[in-house]
Length: 263
Image (cartoon, rainbow, N blue to C red; front, top):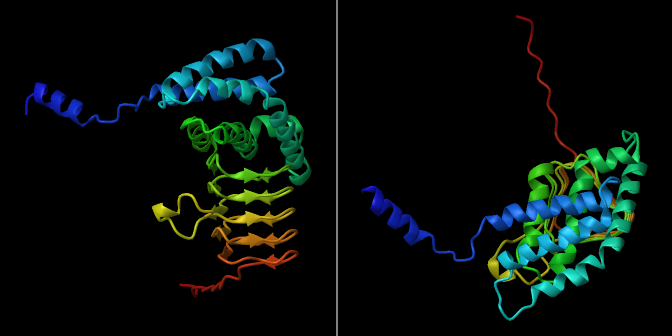
């Protein structure tokens, strides 16, 4: 096959007319500016809101494929929600300071904690998700996932004062509901029991009630699974049924130690 044929074949199989990777790059730039605008003390708010609006217009041009839907109006609604989002994120940061004895200052949480960064980008993406803005919210949370190892679908519902410690390997599914004052550790999965495509519009992921702690590598599955308030889920637990409030759930491994005789 000569080069001309190769080129023709590649063009023939590039069959997604809306697949522009510039959208991915521009979403990441928008996300970075948004984060700095909310938190960095040296970043001017007024100037950056104007720049963010311009960047958002570029995302609309790339992502809003439905000509009958006015995506440009989304920015007006979204920017009005930023103060409340920031207020909630400050509560998340305070929860981390209060939960983690290793945190030396709240500034450390904002700048160095992957769990906080993942929560921040989730909350910013979630409001766009609720507006029905296509693809961009998922690109935002995937950007955070790539940087932190924390995978939160922008469709999840998460209450106030949420804390993720360490973070690596955390997975929170699209229809998960997490209420207030919840703490989770690395490797936790809030997932679905089944992955059939026809379940797309059903609640597939668990509900976590207030003041629950979920320790490392616990797996909680199913849309009907509810973890009751004030419960503690131990590390490596595998849960597919509801847990009453004020419960402690733990996994007991069988440990065998074999000592070789001196040779």
